[in-house]
Image (spheres, rainbow, N blue to C red):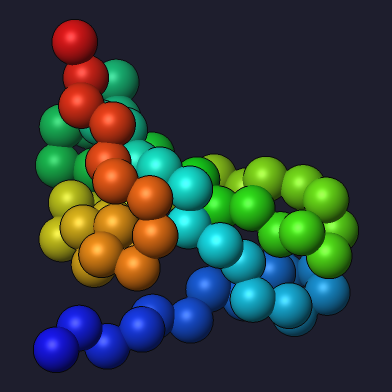
Amino acid sequence: MTEKLPANCPKCRAEMIYVTHLPHAQAPHMQRTTFVCYSCNRTRCYMLSTEMAAAYAGTGAPAVEAP
């Protein structure tokens, strides 16, 4: 069973929703992970390790593969 990971907005503290993650252009062990906060109507991107991005991917949309 996968545990839900909380991702809270740094501005309003509402829970953000995972959108996608893509490989980082210069750091192959990192993923550019995007979340959306509907309260603030804003997306936020974080550079996360591959393992952490995969953990969030299990809670939302599927990952996008790089061409």
